[in-house]
Image 1: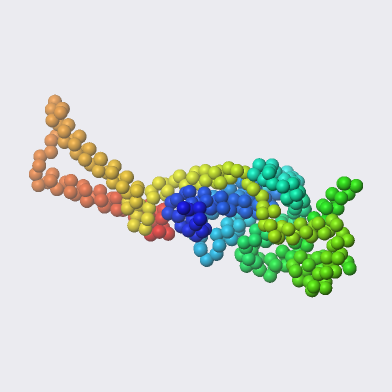
Image 2: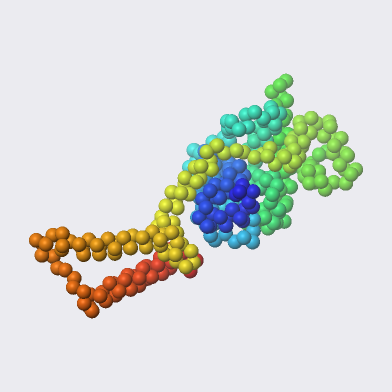
Length: 187
Length: 161
């Protein structure tokens, strides 16, 4: 039963040659890696490529992974680096507007209110800076402490804390703007 | 009360006094869009999945295909452990081929002269010299295999050895 194994046990199995165990790790973190990549590159297709390539790099470097930190921290750092590298290399024409939402069959059945909230959130987040988007995304993943976030972003924990607070305020202001726009559109 | 960014920041971080908190909530009650915005910001905090995006359904499969494409290399073909690749499955495979070649070769070359006498193929006479040759050849092959094993370990599995 590999489904209930923790990350380190799965990694041990991968290193023993069990590819299936790596598939389980990918499934466990795919939405987090994809979300982080998407928040940085703002393009769903590119985000998929970035996140997939990050997982491949992680696989190749798995032997060097030191278990003194969480697997997710290490993964997110690689995803973030991959996404930032993509942003540095990408051509200007890729800086298209962030799509409000992409068709997601898995979430199609969820309640309308939740979808609306997601839509507002996406729209507001898209208007923030890359730094704000990254810090908020990592913060709201919930599983990372400030120290782990600082490890992912390569910045001191105190700086991250200030950034989280300011980014959250800017998000609230951005949401306020979208709410007002919506009210105006209804009048 | 004017809801400045500083006050809003401290409100969202839960750093206001109860009195200030009450004032902010009263102010929010007068501003529906701002109230919704703050609620949504807090909602995301309570529900991490609200901001989570799902990749395409075949995401994991595509990752594994890429991984397997990268894995298909000599390094992966010669599965190994700290003892060397000959002690693993690849060693068994190599050993089986080696045995087949030696035994098969012996049978073929030993039998050929009697099957085709017209070809005047040389036959090996059992004497002290020819008796020793298979032993020497076997030891030499083992030495070669040992050296190959060490080379593979050093070249591809430096961390393991």
